[in-house]
Image (cartoon, rainbow, N blue to C red; front, top):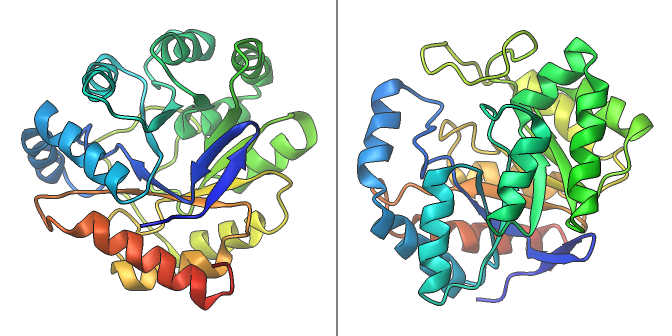
Length: 269
């Protein structure tokens, strides 16, 4: 299956990227659901899912920068896998710069600042930390971006940063301004008003955007979510979607077809 591509600076990536949250047990649904994902996604199953994605035409994955993911990616690459890794920094790293160096040292082709960290740094006025992160990735010669759950993150970035891409969450499930880390016990919300504000913002941004949480962590049916995302994706944009093969072994193939059908419907294919 041929999937169109976009550019993140000098890096060419497919317009559908497989997301790593299910691999790491971040369901954004419940603690039980997250535990089920961890139990299901053995190293072998993750590697098999990555090879399936590659066979379907994806050339990039997005996953967390930690020992679990880097171990699995190394196995995938050692077995002949060719997808590149767009790395999300680990929110628990000592500093954003240390998190960037970890990802880059372990084979990341591009790196972006974790959305919870961006929310927190912008809210707390820790702009020097963001600039230091950007400089570290730039110095390594890799494309650099930020993720975020708040519109304010990207309004500030447009004025103060020179980035290669943005990761824009369609929702702000839980506030991260005071504590940047994901709280698995917190009640999360996926509000239509959040989605409307973010897709409107995306149209004004000057950099390519990777749209994420477009399915509201499984709360929106895939046909509806992909149709809506395609309507709001600019030709320079891509979408990131996590896959949970225990629910549906053909989920990834179905998502590829949904994206292609909906891009065709809006005249982008």
